[in-house]
Length: 139
Image 1: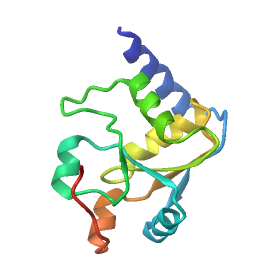
Image 2 (image 1 turned 45 degrees about the horizontal axis):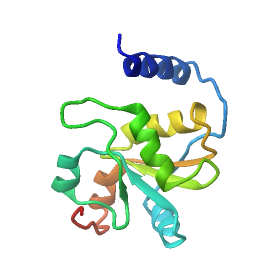
Image 3 (image 1 turned 90 degrees about the vertical axis):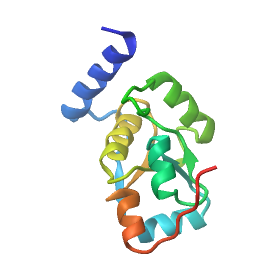
């Protein structure tokens, strides 16, 4: 088993056992997201490149893909990229297609990586778009 696979396995066990090391993830809706964007809170879109290109992104989002097009991931690299955008004490919002992937990553950030203020966009960008909120092409 690779080192990353082992780490991911351990993370899954911790998440499903509901072990709490830090704050809880807060689920937010589209209106909450709009308000947080206006306040300058960092938004991290964890989807794959093809997903960003297919739907567009919430303007100003930081594009930090977790799973690549082949379903592979590099947890250490992802954490390094997240930490380059926001520190553990700052508020950060995660978004994905439907809110599932971002919810699991938000739980990881709070329960394992020590982030204190992580929000997850419920129903993800799919719902954002369905409610006629604007998106822009990824850079």
